[in-house]
Image (cartoon, rainbow, N blue to C red):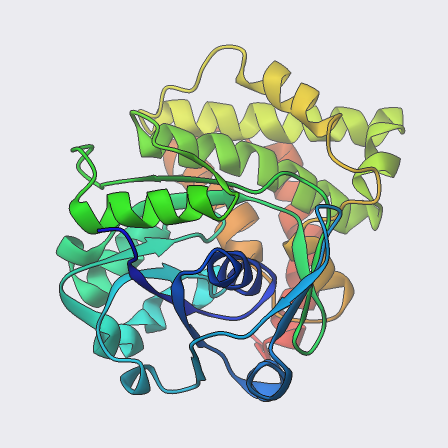
Length: 313
């Protein structure tokens, strides 16, 4: 399959970026958007600001109704983690062979997606990118080299449509990896994103400020160690040097970088607190694993999260 039809479900920083680079590379892209993003992209196209070069594209189809696009070969699910259970709304995009790639933070998205649309359509995936909505219809890429990992839930070779999506992303300039164990890859990503999101949110600081301050740098390390311990208790065998490697990776992130959860909290929006921080606290409690650093971060951020979601008790 040389030119798969790809739908992007969600037009935020991640969905908007991947939609734009795939369209620029010549692929058929349908985008499901809403609100001001929907209006702006329909009228003026999708603009990307990036250290790799600014550009603007027009997509084949922009809609807020999946049935207007119809069945496609692959879907990139780019909504927030708490919205994954609502993914059944994408059913009009599915043929018998359609594959859906979830790119949410956390480690629960694939299982939730399976429950919504069945396992035959579900891939496991993650991405690393600093990307946000700068204004309606305008995506700002923050400089980190975009990377996607994907795989089949059972660890088998990629299906035809999954392989076509992988090749399309590579042709669009995205690094793509297919690790032997996606569960290990997801927990390694969680180890990283829980640390930078959680510490960034409570410190209200950029990654450069965090790593230059000894106490917050040490808090990063403690969070990573706790995620490692919880993963091990759940049978996820992360590499012995994963904390050391992840701390080294933190040094390569642009100094002004911030995580999406951190930005949402700073802007008073609902965040992925439960998927990124709460999940480690819950799993730790279930296994009897102490997670004092994660407990502190979760307790510090939970009152605002409940307030913005209108949860009173």
